[in-house]
Structures are given as structure tokens and as C-alpha cells.
Length: 240
Image (cartoon, rainbow, N blue to C red; front, top):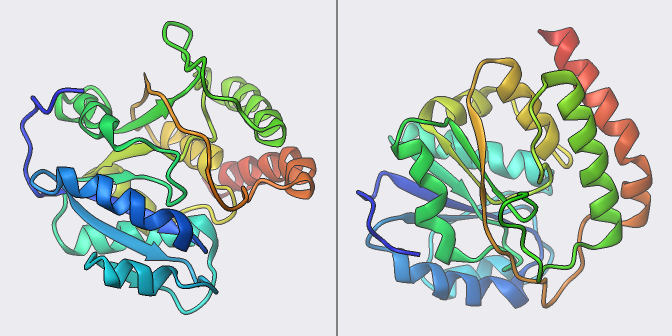
């Protein structure tokens, strides 16, 4: 990846983290390589471990939530923070270290070129799939289902609907600062954007396997995911 796009510190990397003390320090050290181009904020989503202390020891900025709001609540907090401080782009990177910061400059290019309002980093694009990444079974089931449903209701096929590596321009993240899905919000958020006329595109990226901790996509959540997606989509349609 080349750092050859026009950069400034109006771009914010938002890292939602829940009990990621074992992973977060390595990720923050990687991200510091890009500190000339991006600001960074960690949103500690009510962790019960030492995530907050680890982040502060690293001298990184942090928003510490008093209780666990879920990934949606953590990111909505980041969007409100970004809006009040004049940021132009927010890039979400998960705190588990799977998202490689080497793709930061690539993921914002479609926004800088004014060809997208939201950019998804995808492991599964047809032209350049990430063949080294092994998707956990439960997550793959949820992703395939949400891809199909999203394609049916919008006509747009997003190959990696559960990817948390995404960038949003100011118009898009201010839209989410007002209303954002709470639990596993990725597919519902895409539906909200597309339904409201925002331009969503994917770019091919590579991801790393989680080294520590466990995925929030458990067997039970995977089993309930299809029903939750359908209910979430129906709620969006009714509200509209």
C-alpha cells in the first residue's frame, strides 16, 4: 500500500474494543505508523479486563463507556465524537487485530475520489478474494445469509456484509450518529445507507486471523442471526 493520497488529520480511526487487552497494544503500535495522516480513538465498550489501562499506558486517546453497549453503541459514540470535532472521514477498525492498518489509505480512496460515501473492506470480492483467510463457520453462515437478504431488498450485492473494516464520509457517519443498529449492526447499517441514497462500494483487502480472545459471533448468535437480520430490516422499512 502506498501513502500517496492527499492526507490530513481530519481523518479518524475509531477502534471499538471489548476485553481486548491482549490484542489492542499491538494494533495501536501498528496504527501509530500512520499518525501523521490519521487521528485515533479507542472506544472501550465497558470492558471487564484491563483494556482501558492498556490503552492509556500506550498514551492513546480513549472513550470509556460505563457499560457494554455492543458494537453498534460503541461506533455510534465514535460517530458523535467525530461529528463534534470536525472530522471528514471515520475509519472503523476492530480491536482484535484482524484488520491490517496497511489498507488504511486504500479504503478511503473512493471517498476522496467522491465515488463513495461508505467503503467496505472485503475478503471475498470476485476479482481479488483473500484466499489465505479462513472464515469461522458461524460467521460465514451469517455473512452468506445477510448478503442474500441485502441483495434481494436493495439489488446491490455486498460480498462481505459482516466486515467491520469500513470507512464513512462525514455525511454518512453523521447520519449514523443519529440512529445506528446496536447488535451485529453491519448488514443493517448497509441497508440503511443504501435505502437512504448513500453510495456503498467494496474494495478487496486481506485480513488476519484473530490471535487471542473469542469472536462475538457464537453458535447461539449465529443461529439467531437470520431472524435478527430479517427483523432489523423490517424495522428499518417500517420506520422509513
